[in-house]
Length: 412
Image (cartoon, rainbow, N blue to C red; front, side):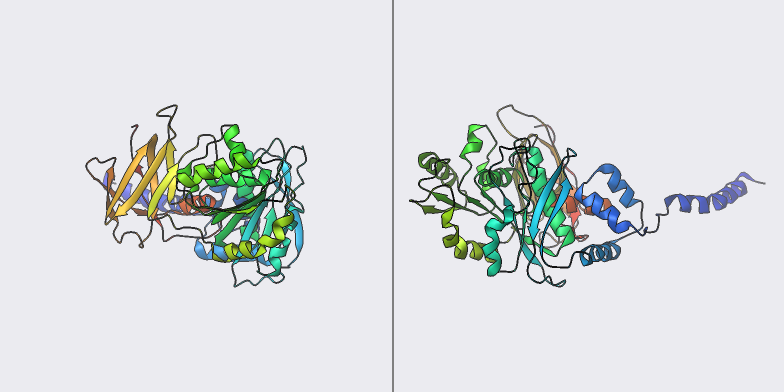
């Protein structure tokens, strides 16, 4: 037998073996449980387990429908979630009076105050502070729990906020463009922390009976460039003994001078007990109805805060490094025809997201910090990247119309 014939026979024999090694497994009966477990507690191993099964958009949407069908009864509930440190905490939530499967609803995540305890259940009924809003608009309310070990402005507190969004959007038909973050007292400071370090899912922020000046005291990174990307509506009082008026106003003035889109509502004779909240209902309702998450896929703007949660909208992946102890890594960019104009510092690479609304061709150019443009080519997202992007956006929406490319920026 000639070597040529021997090789041909060997390839024919190995063909079925090769195919079987690369063939993905059929979906198991408990795929909905596996999907839920991964989405609520993303880990690399869990993602690899999901990717070992043969599924695409149709199977994903069908599984998502199965999950939501089990949670279609309206009411008031609480649930225990496990955070990224393995600690159990309570999330309380309320649904609209009727849940229609073909309707998307706004969601308000409410952050309670008084986090100086060790309790992990203060969110069980905290959302009731905003109960009156549900009388005039169909929406979901949800409130996670925090304490002195998981303050809203710590990485673990911020991750609980995002996990609560993932929980609600997995179980119920939440509008991904109408997710708002509201909070009272310590929860108001949590709103500013999230606005400065989590760009992804939010349409706007409603801090009440508090502001972000407490974060300045502890050296928390508050970046006006990040804060200005979504609207902020801050309600405060003149006789609030926990939030001195001069310090609060200096904080607002600093943000306004920096160009932050912040609007305030002031009650000069009220204190910290938010008795004025009923008068705010028309203004709050208007913002829930009108605010939408900005679409950032045609532009990039973010300052990175090391050790804190980062979900830059419009960026699938990135790597940063410490370029200067006094400067945080940053990236700013916008499209000029088929050229992505980028300015960055302390960023090694980014993988921007794009669809046909930005540019209409696969090949594009990048001009970085004024240098000569370099050529790149976008590729359609893989299943793995689609799932990773779901975690970035905190909502389970299959988006295979997006493209990405890794743009090397170097160690500037």
